[in-house]
Structure formats: C-alpha cells, structure tokens
Amino acid sequence: MYPIVLTLHSLVRWAVVILAVTVVVRAFVGWFGKREWASLDERLGLFFSISVDVQLLLGLLLYFFLSPLTTAALRNFGAAMSNPVQRFFTLDHVLAMAIAVVLVHVGRALSRKAADAQGKHRLAAILYGLAVLAIVLAIPWPFEIGVGRPLLRLG
Image (cartoon, rainbow, N blue to C red):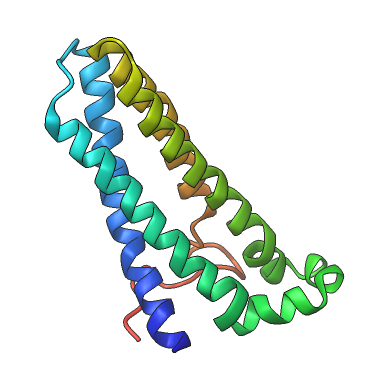
C-alpha cells in the first residue's frame, strides 16, 4: 500500500504544481490587465483547491500510517528533530503544506466573495501566490541534499 500511495502523492504533486502556476498567472494577468473574472478562473480555482485537498489526504495517509520515515519519527519526536531528513518530513514539509492548503482555501473563498473582478484577481494572485511559495519551498526537490526525492516516482 505504501508504494502505491507514495506514487500517487508524487503524481498528484504535478497536478497541484501545474494548476498552481495556471491560477497564479491568470490571477496576475487579470489583476494587472484589468480583465474580467471568468468562469474559467472560478473553475481553475476549484480544481486547484481539489488537487491540494487530494494531495493533503494522500500526505496524511503517508504521514500517520504508511511512511516508515514519519511513523518512526512520530514514535520518538525528540530524536527526529535532531535528524535533518526526519525533521524535514515530520515538521517542515507538513507545516508548510498545511499553510499552503489554508492559503488556497482562504484565497478561493475571499476571491469568490470580492465585489469586483479586480478584487477577485488581486486576492487570488496574492493568496494563491503565497500558497505556491509555501508549496515550492516544501517540495523535496531532487537537488536538496538529504531530503531530495525524484521528480517523478513511478512505483
């Protein structure tokens, strides 16, 4: 079960990243280009939110039940904090991604409630942009020493 969920977590990451870039670019273009808020903006925000939620659920399954790294770290949290790899996956990654999930949902809710198109785009650009920053900082990129993981994991 662990390899399947880990592979899905790796694949869904790319849906999150692609949707994140798309919604942020559209939001900034809409904000500075004084474009109307389109139904596509609404749908992309929804799909971005859904992809982040799916990624969160897969991550929580790994974190609490399936990953030997985090389940061992949770048994001895103090020792895990002195190990950079365990600390990254047990604390840093999870905390930054939780912040990103909150920012995505707040960004979607506030942008939907804004009175005009400019406000919608501005709120989406700022809050989705901050979420993307948190996501990019928390992804275990292959070039990161110790915590790096493959860009695409297929089993």
